[in-house]
Length: 392
Image (cartoon, rainbow, N blue to C red):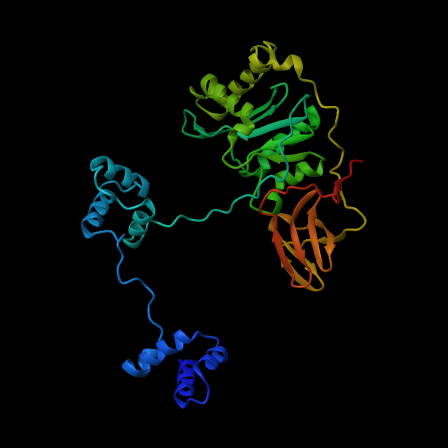
C-alpha cells in the first residue's frame, strides 16, 4: 500500500514520465494506470489487494448433487470418493458427476474424512536381493501370523527356512515378537547350524526399524556376526515367496487345528518340522526332501562377538546413550538404536561426511551446520568405502 501511494504521488507530481516510473518501481505502465483509476474512483481503499478468486465457477458442485453425495456417504460411512462416484454413475449414468478429487474435497470440508496417522516407514533396502544357489547362502525368516490356541492364548510362530534347500531350520512359538526371544532362537540356530551369508526378512519389527539404514538391535547383531541383512520391498511379500508359500502349507497342515496350550502346540511344530524336512517330498526339489539336500554351514559361530573395523580414512565417533553424535562440541541426534555404538564418518567434501555403521550407509552429516540427513531411498551406486566386520 505505501509503495503504491508513493508511486501515484509521483505520477500526480508529473516530474517523471509513466514509462520512467514503471522502470523505477518494476511494474508495467498498465498497472500504474489501473491503480490511478482505482484511486480516482475508490480513494485509498482501492489500492488494497483484491481476491483473485474467479467470480463464476462453472464446475462447482450444485446443491442437489452435494446432498446426493453426502447422502451416499452417510449411508455408507466406509466408502471413499471413488466408490461414491462409481455408485452414483451406476444409479444415473446420464448425469455428469464430479471427479473423485472434488468429491474428496467436499467430504473433507464436511468433516467426514478422518486424517490418517502418518506411520514412520522403514528406509528401503539399498541392494538387490541375492539369488540363493547353495544352502546357507540365504536364510528367510518371518512370523507366520498369530492365531489363538485352545486356551485362548496367542501363538506367534517364528519360521526360519533355507532359501535354496527349503530346509525348515526352525518353527518356534514365541510368547512375544520382540527382539530378545527372536535373538535367542537365532543364537541357538547359529550355534547348531553355523552362520548363513544373508538373512532375508520383511521391514517389520524386530527385524528392521525406522532408524537410519533400517537398523534394529536384531539386525545389528546379525551384521556384527558378518551376516548381510537384506529386506524385501514394502508390500512385496512375493520377494520372500518361498517362505510365504510355506506359511500357506503350515496353515493347512497344522495351524488350522491348534492345540490347547503352548506346550502341546510346540510339540506339534517339532513333529511337523521333522516331517517337512525328512518325509514330505518337495516338488520344487524334484521330489527330494529338504533334509536330503541341506548341509550345515561351514561358517561357524564365533566364540565372541566380532568388533567392527572401519577404513583408516574414516573418523570414528561413539554415539551417546541417547543416540546423539558429538562433533566439534555439538550433539546431533541420529537414533537411539545406535546408542553406545561407534560410527564411521567418511569425508566426501569439506565438512560433509557419509555416516556408516559397519557397511550400512546411514546418511550424510554436515559438520558445519551439524545437520544429519538419513538415507530415504535406495542407492543406485556401490560406495567403495565400506566398513567391515572383522572375524577373529
